[in-house]
Image (cartoon, rainbow, N blue to C red; front, top):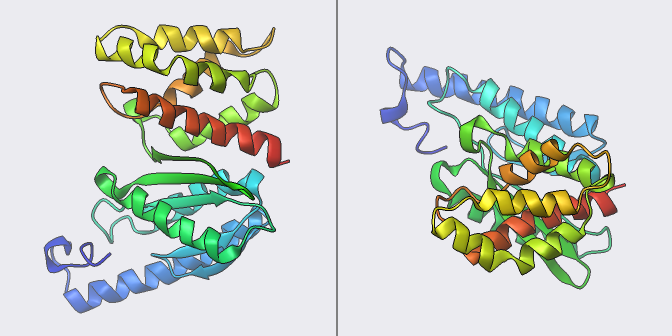
Length: 246
């Protein structure tokens, strides 16, 4: 926000003090709308300052709530800020998990999201009572205009019916093969499609499952085995929400 409100980013024809005042009023309005959006998802805003938001939301609604709050900021700052973007962290944790530890992990996840190019990413973490289960960082806007967060929410529905959690195990086992195909500029997507097909039930929307799985893959031209592991972590988060977010 400091850079966004610098003199270099001030829209032409604006007076600095007047512009800052308009941005401040806009952020107040955004904070109010974000708090209402969280309540619509059966959550509660702990702090809403427009450019900073902390809230608690049921696991099943967290992805949708995060997307809605991002949309409200981007839409609400149009014309006030140049190319507004949002960095978000969503941490899934059990009600008995130490709150301060969860907040600390959220701060670390937010830092990871901000380190990505453009600072327009969604960091996701699953915390079990025994420790961290999975973590991943996805861009808010993926390749060819895709929306990985929406695809992840769709995968939650997929794991609720028709898509087997065994897909995660097989993709992890095949991580080196997938990475080798990608590194050789071969069609690794065909191998991913084969695995999704194997783990989709009869009558399942196969093409839809394949598309959503591909839309949460790491946005790199050459996958490494570690990238495939991060990809599996994103799928694990969807599986977790499907199982635990009921």
